[in-house]
Image (cartoon, rainbow, N blue to C red; front, side, top):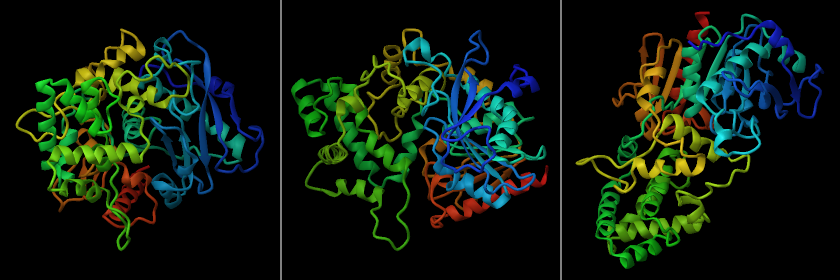
Length: 476
């Protein structure tokens, strides 16, 4: 349990919140597009007593007396009001008479506590500060929501923290560390286990791609070329891949994982009966050109991907690109700092004899080396994940009333709680938690997809999520 005491009544009264385009003192019913700003502490644990403006959005249109409040911290992306009226958090609120609150993560969107993103200014971006941000907000929110919207939150209303991907971690950890504030949590695709050698990512990618054997052959050929060290031959292959501008050979090798990883991680099957392209089949079609060897097919595929998406290889794939750009509002830089300092998540080539879909040159040391360039020599890029996993309990968080959801096609499921590979099992009750598996879905599909998608098992998962939340609320 965090040792910082809960916020007292005096602190709640002094909290300043402002509405964008409307007076916070007014009682008019506000549009769900209105942004609000909360005076948040820059550092909950240190000597810096200053505050910054933290953005959030509210939809209380579905709220009924004693209904739950679904709090979604947007994680490593800017807060978007779209989740107020669509997606699973809104569906849960509609079905349970609840309210949706979307809270922006510090150092993302417009919620920056610093004037630039130089190394010393990043020190307030910690998981501990983030969790305390949410606790402070929950303790302070009742007065503001009543003041700004006219909605009186019942003292019987329960706070349920929800999230997808990293924000799902936040939901679980809030439930674990602040059980007196957070009644329950819904965590979609939560990679709770920090890792600096995440080779299992590609094992899931390989299971999802029918052309994985050909990709593996291409990678083995490429590594042999890089091992041989013929500069002319290496540079000719860089040009064939559309990556001739990359000077570092490891940057070149690392760039080749982008398309495959993205295709699987964000895979959604085409709607039944539609003519939409199946992205997995489309990717693998490149390896059906039997007149070419697998490496040439992979080069043609990657070059087309680079060209069709207008990607600048140096900006996108050079490991030191942007290191000295300290301008504010770079969310990617914020996330890089978090993985450098606390989470790792370095995706690496697996050990032999496992099938490799990425080059052996894509190592944790190569991925972490730019951390010093970006943030200074104190940020080594190899966080103490063993200590972190002991503190936050890894895959065994000490929680109750949590819904864990994962898709079997999601590479991040390997760092999440109890993904079951038996297709005959969809819902597992583990103690006072519920674990749900989507067998044809990938990353956070249950959380963000439109409710109009009811195929590939997502409708069953959503029914199970709602059933679990209703069961939890019945325990209140």
